[in-house]
Length: 343
Ligand SMILES: C[S@@+](CC[C@H](N)C(=O)[O-])C[C@H]1O[C@@H](n2cnc3c(N)ncnc32)[C@H](O)[C@@H]1O
Image (cartoon, rainbow, N blue to C red; front, side, top):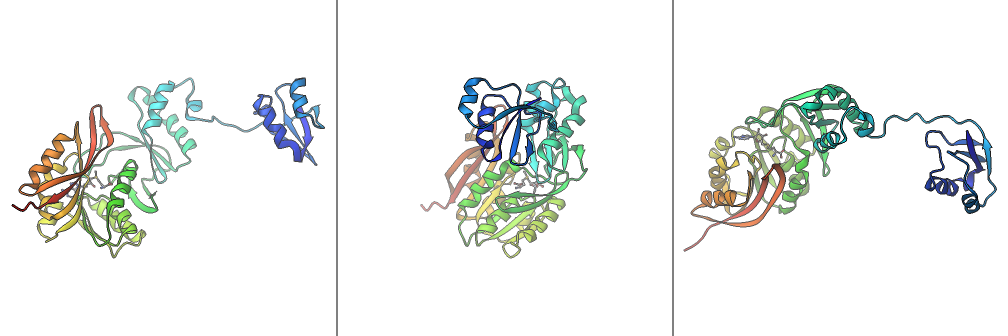
């Protein structure tokens, strides 16, 4: 092979020129000899480039060690086996939760699932890869997962806006895609508020809010595993004096507690409307409800809120599409203030 021998202290500038002109053989390693480096070349640079380099360089015949280089992307890894468009689909479905990657593999390329798992393990540098095996379902909103590669562990600690969230991806609901939404809600909170998270899961909303505000938050969930991790997370994030995890059906919990909250979070978008009476019972006049619903437009959820608030009124503070749910359907977020109207 041929190489360009140049003094060490001038090598970087020359390397850039050679690289720009595609003259470096990237499969070989640059060699160092005393005060010189030898850059592996694909071909001898022409006179024009040698004029630009214009330095005391020498083209020599030598041997180089080759780079140990595996595939450089998921596409490289699966080349010839899986269509590029399918790989884009897989990449779009990636959820990274702490050390764990959860991805979706279309059924027509199921035969490559282990290869895809190994590729994902390599490129994400996480510890475990799982595949989604069902939709999110049931009261506790979990999904079946199939182990693909790495360590078969499902408990991990996810970091989000400075919070540590411990959870088991098989036993509780958690979506890293809601991080921005959680931040948005937390940024609205004011010190001194009494807050209820009606469907708190492992307590990502309460922990983020409590780390940034002087508040009291009831973090309620019906899933014993979510309650277990909510307690862990409250300790991990040192917010034990602000967040009170409660295990139970929120309807029962609120019925038995005389709470008049400044703020209520209702992140159970498939069924939250069934609990609007409970929320209205526990929100004080002037309090804010962060309401979520899977819907095609804002009209239906706003109508439900109006009806549930009656005889009080609602003032819509904000409405947004949090995420796409399915074609034409959105995970909507609506913030309303509940107001007492005096005749
Ligand atoms: C979509 S998850 C939201 C979790 C959390 N807010 C988050 O952002 O990760 C909904 C949660 O509501 C809980 N849940 C469902 N029905 C409930 C009920 N009747 N009372 C209390 N929690 C309930 C589920 O166990 C689940 O953890």
